[in-house]
Structure formats: structure tokens, C-alpha cells
Length: 458
Image 1 (cartoon, helix red, strand yellow):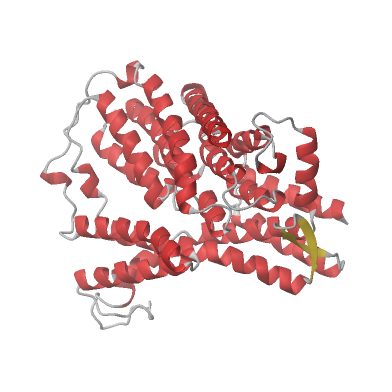
Image 2 (cartoon, one colour):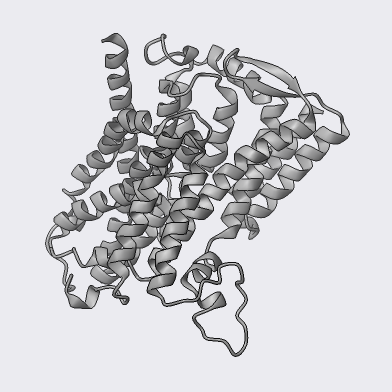
């Protein structure tokens, strides 16, 4: 029966990775795989277990209890993401991101390279790497008119955005999963992963700045009054929204409540100001536009408009894939696989960390995230490794899974969205950008290992 379960998971996973070839949205195989796996467990009356991270062993459980447990953990992530996505859409409703373009005054390509890379690194840590990529490529399309030049900038934005998302608990779905899953704390994640992430961003930019594509000046005019937000509240909503998202880790630290509670509070505050600034009626509970009433109510309120633009397919995909991986975890497969993996993989660093979890395993996880989605990889690792919170293993996984996807344009959400927005060719990226991303990934990984070993040996 376990063989059948593995076959179902592999077939579903292949369907997810080949969504462009099959022309089927990846949420469909993810949801189908999840339902089939749990149905097999229920019909075959297979024993299920819960991983006890303290005792590092499997404890028998009941299918109803374990399924509810995993659904609760998954729901925490999804509700958190829904809140963050809505806040970002509210900012966009007021054209708040146009404020950023107003700060761009230079015409030097090399200075613009550093400016956009730093912006991508910082923004992705706050509003996540996917949204940061969308915002910056939209700005790039207005600043740089030459298509070929813009492709180079887009490639570097992908690298910088993924590097920026890796060190922040709200910068990438995978780091958010580790944070909500109590594998890392916000302060420790930032402390241990920030410097390697900076190296991962800076090294490729240093090499790229010597390319002819980044020499000279651009022809388009930049900055100016024309770049101001369409709404007079644009800048206010930008700073309010970003501040509200940054507030969430502090809320969790102070109250010790799950992060989604703080995100809901932040959303409520941002939504209140959005309704006030738009002179809308407070009708958040009724999204239906009523005939004969003002456009300021119902669907036309900024909150409802923002909720309607949230990517629900992504939310459903996360639901399917996380619960599918949870099925394998509940059967104890991931736990036993991790034990077998560690026995066959050599250690690269000190043997005193992570209960002998190999650095090579984590590096392979990063390389693997360039080929397949990093969300299920991290979800699997959370069920594989029974090491305590803030163990260096979790920090290394956050770095590797977050930055490894930059090596292929299809390896990260930031890369996929940039590919769609700029029609970037897969092989162009592989030839021009991939080696820079690999160089940054390895440089940051070496930096992480060196710093970790210095701290442990101190």
C-alpha cells in the first residue's frame, strides 16, 4: 500500500511540475493528490503517527485527529497569506507603489542595477519576493524602454528578490511556513540568514555590473511629477501597509499568539484607513454590488476590490500540496526517509549541529528547489528533521530553499512571474543569469557555514 501512495504522490508531483506542458493549473493535481492520499489512508486503515520533536520519535494517532492537526497548521499559513496579499492589493489600489518610482533619479545603468537590486532585496523581505518582483518589473517597464536591457535587469531582480525573501519570516512562503511551524523565530532567522542572503545578492551584482549590458546610461526620463501616485493617499497607504506587515513579527513576539492573528489586526487597521480615504461605506461583509446604490459600496470599496484580486488558485495549491505532504508525514515516511538520508550523506560542516543533518542534504534541497517547487520541499523537510526550534539546520534550509530557486527561471514564484511579465526565454536565462544565481547561492551557503561554525566553536 505504501508503494501505491508513493506512486500517487510522484504522479501528482509530476503533473504539478509539468503544468505548462499539460496546460492544467497546478492546483488541480495538488488538490486531487491530497484527496486521494488521505482517502487511501482512510480506506486501507493505515496507521498514522505524529512526530514528537522532543523525543525524536513517532507517536500513534487517529486519522481524524492527525488530519485536523495538519489542517489547522495549514490554515494558519493560508490565513496569514490571505491577510498579507490583501494588504498589498490595498496599497496597489491607491497606486502606492508608484511612490517608489518617484525616488529613481539616476540614468546610469550600473547605479540602476544596484538600486533595483537593493530595492528588491528590501521589498521582498516585507511584501514577499513574488509581489516585490511584480512591483519592480512594472517600474522597470516604465523606466527602461529597451527590451534587451530590461531583461538583464529583470534577471537580477529575481536573484535579489529571492535573496531578500530568505532572511525574513514574511519574505517567502517557505520562511513563513518555518516561522509559523515554530521551526525558526523571527529574530534568530534574521540574525543567522541576513548576512548570507546579502552575500547571495551582492556577489552576482558585482559580477553583473561589469557586463556591457549595465554600462552607460538609459535613454528614458526617470523620476518627476508624472511618476507620482494617482491617488493623493498613495504614499500614506504604502508606508502604512508596509509598516502594518512589519508589525506582525513584533505582535507575535509580544503576545506569543500565532502570526495570522497579528496579520488580521494589521489588515483591519489598513482596511479602516482605506475605507476612510476612499469615502466608502463600511460594507465589508457584503461584496455584492446593489443596483441603484453608489459605486462607493459593495464591490467598489477598496477592501472588496483588493479581496477580489487575491490569487485564490495559489491559496488552493498551497492547501493541496501541504496536506499531501502531511499525508506522507503522518505515515512516518518522511521521518524514516530522513534517517536513511543522513546515514548515506557525508557531513560538510561540524558534526555537533542538527543531530548530524548533513549540509550536503540541505544544499541538494536548494538545488532541487530550482527544478521543483520549494514549498513541498520545505514542507517535507519539516516532517523529516526532528531538530529543535532555531537549530542551524532550519536556518540553512530557509536560506537554501529561498535562494536556490533563482538558478532556473521556473525555480521560484518570482522567476515565473517575471517570465510571464517580460516573456523571458528559459534558455536565455539559463545561459545569461543562471551561473550568476549559482555563484550567489554557493557564496551565501559558504558564508552561512563559516559563520555557523565560528559561532559554534566560539
